[in-house]
Length: 304
Image (cartoon, rainbow, N blue to C red; front, side, top):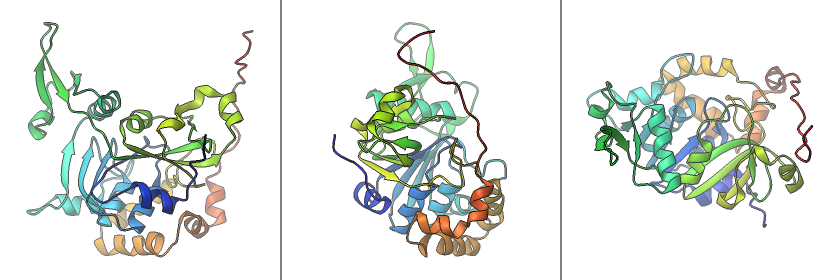
């Protein structure tokens, strides 16, 4: 298969378009901050941002003016507090960011329906909650099998899904280990897929450990090799979560001026992720390197 390797600049320029619905997925682990920053850098506009847990990267993207709408199930600075930029544009008399809220499972159900080309996905988890009152897209339906009423959510089919992973082949076969969110469902639901990885590996490496492959190359449009591309989130086996970053973001996010200064210093004034990593400095990077934690060895050719 032909190579799908591209630079982050080219992948975002070619595949993320003004007005798109964009999903940057990854559940605490493997969040592609690098892709979000490149979208900001290129000045994309009118995006609908979808994500189970919008956290700091979406706060930064909203502050940069790229988004008109947020589809989500929980938002906040995990372990710290709120998201100041999102609060500024959603609270008050004249909000400028549209919100569409679901439960976590509701978002997973939407991606799953999108991936399977289903017209809706049924679920029970909205009984005794007020989310259906807040979101008219969460609707009741009668079970065709005679066992009562359930709720339904519509499919979610992003124009672009962006995921971060440990490694991929040049053809886009993508392998992940550690904590998973709904990257696979979001990728299969999307029209276009960008995979950002710490490492590019040979096809032989992929074939030697096929069970780690969660996204096949046949649905991938671009593979971007971007070490440290998920910082400040973490990549199991590569670097730990940078808790200091999340703590530092809280007072920055509370001030529009401080947020704009941060975006100028750490995004607009840098030409890409390599410059960002250099700016972080070797001492900080070294503090995030995990120690060894080897797992067992599996022989896929013989059972013992």
